[in-house]
Length: 220
View: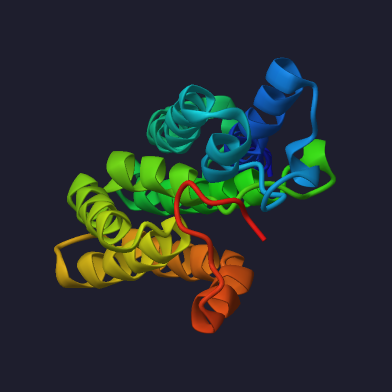
């Protein structure tokens, strides 16, 4: 029982890393505003860029990426350490090599949900793109770099962050299924990619209607 409680606590740490409202805090500290009342109402780096400017946007982007990476690094260190504690009472036969990929995948999902459904913001937040990139880079860097490359090309071609994010999520799913990766990572990237795409539902509607703003334009 103690083992499973400790596992749940580890996932809570990953969630709270994601739930740290970087963009919201930047809005409060720099302009005394609530980003949820401006632009796209998201607290992600794109809306920070639009409302606060390039340097705050870049800082929020970097911190959000680091949040995702930190959740993966934490899971990789915490759960194998947990199995070494006699007092925890881990199930017999459960070894770190079997547990760690699943723990990392669940921690990745937890940080994505935390970023988009922050407990500190009444379960609102961003679209989990930057945090997802951090997770991918720390979990399976070829998949993360592939998604990042597609995002950069799409952004350069169409100057629409939402379209680049959606294409990057699709690319990550394709890459993780095509490359040699643990089953846990594949399931996480599929679930996480679909979650990020679902978070862009409104953007997809505007893309189809031709009203989605380009980078540098104001949000509808």
